[in-house]
Amino acid sequence: MLFKERKTSLECALLKSLNNRMKLHEKDIQYLRNLEKGDEGERYFDSLTAALTCDCFVLNDLRLSCNNATFQIDALMITGETIYLFEVKNYEGDFYYERDRIFTKNKSEINNPLLQVKRCESLFRQLILSLGFNMPVSASVVFVNPEFTLYQAPLSAPFIFPNQLKRYMKDLNAISAKLSGKHRRLAEKLSSLHIEESPFLHLPKYEYDQLRKGIVCDACGSFSCAVKGHAMICEDCGHAESVEAAVLRSVREFRMLFPERKITTNDIFDWCRIVESKKRVSRILAKNFNKFRGGRWSYYE
Image 1 (cartoon, rainbow, N blue to C red):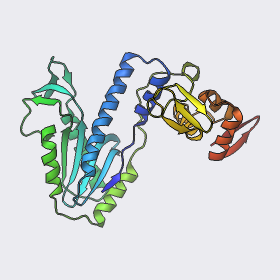
Image 2: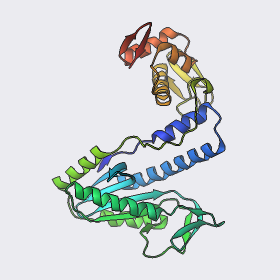
Image 3: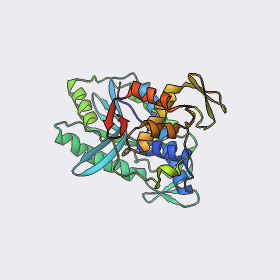
Image 4: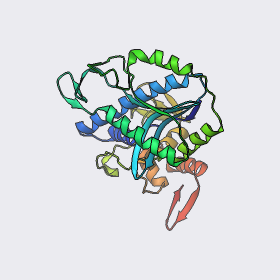
């Protein structure tokens, strides 16, 4: 049973928006690609755990804190017997393992995910004990990309490779132990302790005037959109969306990029650009938000 779903990280969403609206440095573009690739791998693993029929609670993308240390768990599964922690990696290509270190084929060292998963496992054990729960914990690194190979991997390492995933899921499905109220209380407590925002966002500096204005297509990301009656049509891919939905989506993007700014008719009219009149923007805002008077200007929340 899915107990906590995964959301696209704020960092990834911000970088995607900025990549559409300004020229990013290559290092920022590469960082975004890595975030998107990681998210793709995690969501693939989510599809595997969603298909499980054994009695379990699945919590995706948990950010927790214990003893003033923050740690993140890509996926967590509570069964009647054991709690499983998964660090999901979407690495692609040939790698080799040597003296507790992992290298690419051209001998560039990458972070060993074992160090991360061991840290998570240790902090998680401490956390659940402090909450009054004492259950066995099993932590693994899951490599989901079928184009990944790790040579010389030690047999004792808690790695799950792409060609083992099907069999591993079959083994999980064979778990017969049932969940109880204790397990639900633990799942609820962990969900309540989830820290929504990461304190460490790697973002380039940006200002409102730097960014390209307009509504991007929700399907292909193009700015080639035109308002036709009550619909907004993408002239590149043909995707259609109501003008109201497109404006509200743009308001969410504006609020994400500029959380300190008030939502005003003038700002959203300028941000969207392709909506023909301020009155139409004002009607959409008034319908979907509460209006407040602030001196000369009205704003919406």
